Amino acid sequence: MPDRPETDAPEDAPQDVPRGAQLSRTDRSRLRRSHARGSFDRDVVNAILDAQPMCSVGYVIDGRPYVTPTLQWREGDRVYWHGSSASRALRASREAEVCLTVAILDGYVMARSGFHHSVNSRSVMLFGRAQLVPDAEKEPRLCAFVDRLWPGRAAMLRPNTETERKATTLLSMPIAEGSAKVRSGPPVDEPEDYALPLWAGVIEVQTRATGLTPDPRNAPGLTPPDHLRHFRPVG
Image (tube, rainbow, N blue to C red; front, side, top):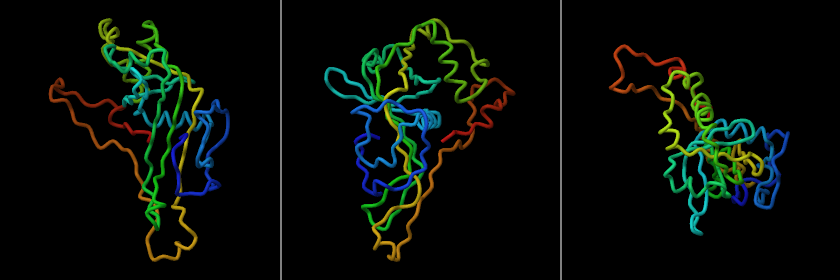
């Protein structure tokens, strides 16, 4: 991520980050630290967005910064998020410059000194102008959001009412300016520290679904559909 301090690996540490179509490199998106961990590769950015629906959106109201957690989803070269039409955050973000971030924790990196402890992670920071999605496009976009997580579920649900659509604001932003940062692998210690009698390595971390809890008001005899029983977060 731009401007994020990194002190646990040299700038030339090897990283397995594929290269392909690139995002725009601007002064605010250029990588100022740990360049080897950074990527402007669109495929890398897309994979992180697709793996983690939880995001944070930064914006400014009356000259003061705010960051709001929400859910995002990607369709092609655009990222979408939604909320209440009464939301102060969404009202402030309409047609305004915002910063959207996604981060995935993959492991705690246990080094031989506190200074070199770190985390294995994947993250994305995107910049752009949020755009209001027209009312006519809300329903297909919201259905796409549901089906992104649980394929086939949108067709099973009661359609959103006109009142519900009016109560929902949907914003999008082109995936054009930003960068990703990926750290993986073991700790990078000082050369003389490798001889110390200390265990070092990685505590692996995964996101997983732990079970289904039925709504006590479910109709009798209902069983979870396959898209719920077999749900696995991408992570």
